[in-house]
Length: 419
Image (tube, rainbow, N blue to C red; front, side):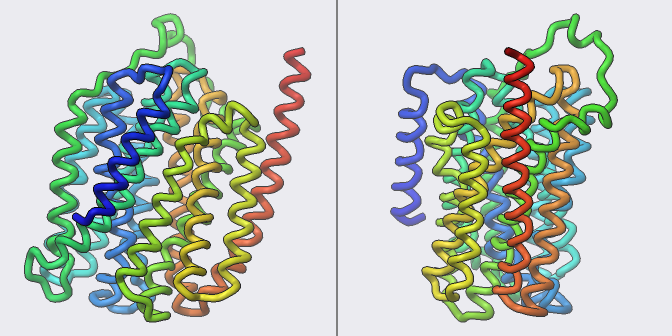
């Protein structure tokens, strides 16, 4: 790996130490901080090479983003598996099972690259998504491992670790591209990815299931899921994360193909833009928790929405490398603010003994929207243009502005009731 990766890794850990000053993180947080990004490498690897490999082995180039879409579908559908196994086995055993599914899926993807089998790659991507579903809900395990007041700070630290995924994933994909002989390359990329997942599985065995509910709480009847989902706080939290994820995926999915295949920018420039994007997704976590506590959820949600509006303005100015870079960096920052805000708000909608099913419903909604966005991105890009994608994203930015206003109104009503 290059010196950039080493430097970023060191900076990330120093930033985490600074973030943790004055607060001793429990062991669970550090275990998640190290193991989670190794599995999250799946996403940038599929984003980076999935479309490039698929454009060569798919029966139709408009299907190039289909593996990424199936990965996201796997995340969405996998949320129900997470809830089922977490209730019966606990977080630790359930998540370990998810890691094992991911390891097997990377080997299946490697075989797909060797045989140039597009449909096998789709199947592998789906099960990689199922594995990611287990990892995505670890953010709730982090919140359950600390007090409510420390939640935003811990969530920020955990999100910050995603910088590793931004660099390790694409670097391993590019470095291992030709480790194994295959018609179009990239088989070795999936072998390297499987190694990262094995390391993550070993480290994760240090995790301990958090205890957050008393027997009295557990004995109380859980409310119907429909009643929980009707609450304004649930809808606002879910929409903040879902719209953020959907818009981010919509534009990010199309970027490698638009940059490299259509505009002719180099693979190195494309990799740099994607790495910068994923870094922008996670680096703001150094301050996001503080900003939420200082200015409130509504303000940070609004700033994230404004970032998405700026993305549209910049993306419509041109398609040079720097246009893509600025648009994708702002896209990452906007996603960070909306996703963390939604995650912080969600626990206010449920009681401890209702958490698994509510978290599953929330993530299913988020990743279903993301799957639709990623699938539509590929088809629209090939059938129209990059600018068309940008125009289509604009109405959802407007919707997000109304969500911010709704949250502001709900917050004022809640304060009035409390007073």
